[in-house]
Image (cartoon, rainbow, N blue to C red; front, top):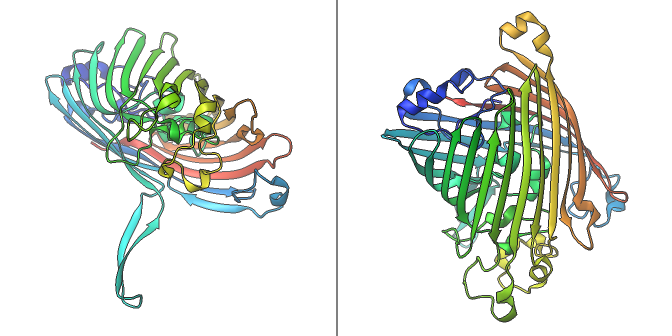
Length: 443
């Protein structure tokens, strides 16, 4: 897909790297040169870079939306379908090249339309002011960093950065996957998009690109049965707690034309990474909650085919002990997670494979007009709670098929039939999803 580039160089280095791009702004939906998220693409040598991406989606879900549908599935088997409109992500990139190898990158993301609140003057209710939340959603500063580039082989980036573990985090823009929503497995068990404050060392040499990061650790009290470590980056404070730390390493290889293969690994401690720091005493002090993650992912784009896939596996030590802790600060667990928020599994996994063929490539006129129409198939399998007493509803397989139409390289219209298959005894969850997406740079 149209890829935002992660090579923030001085202007001379940027021009050298331009040859690795697929026609700059007119890059088709297949570029392979980016191994991590970025916010800049210096078009024609401009210092200022402005761009972004966005998605809007409609879903009709032919299953119950009741929160107890996994607890007593037989009671909700015949519930009516439900529909939803959503704006999963709307993102603004803003970057600047100061020269002499120094650059700035920032990314502001509005999820699900952003959040809204208001203060109302209620004259008929004891003449009082009320603060009301009007809608859900989030607004996040997903990236904000400074970078010093010493050449294509070595760069230092410090600030709030994307942690490129796995396929989705490293390539999460909407033209990087065929489905209307991000692939479900990685999006369920991992932070997505995973972004934390820290420092990154990265570069590209020959057919290899590497990245090493040192970031704040995760918080085990946000882990859950349904989402494993996904909420581990959350913080209720005005700062990111960094009593403990994590480290990531990633390598991508581009030796075979059209193929990128990447491996990534993460390790870090998740216990004792909260406030106050001395809240765990005695035997609790010895609990580490070490998180170990490994991933293999690839993208292939050649001969009018696009294929992508990933395999992720992770382990958290002391999962039993952490799950049993009677932690008194309830703000760490959302109310609807009170029954299982801290009861998470020691292991989790996710795997995905999708492939699509551009049928417009067989028509000269459409190919010359740079239009594309991919017919695709998609399969995923994941489990967010691999544990001694596994809850079978966390073990899910996704089958999807549909189309991606690109009237121009920066815009996609998506449609799919999606079928979520659960273990015997639970109700399967079919859906129809339709979406539009764009991705590009305006300046």
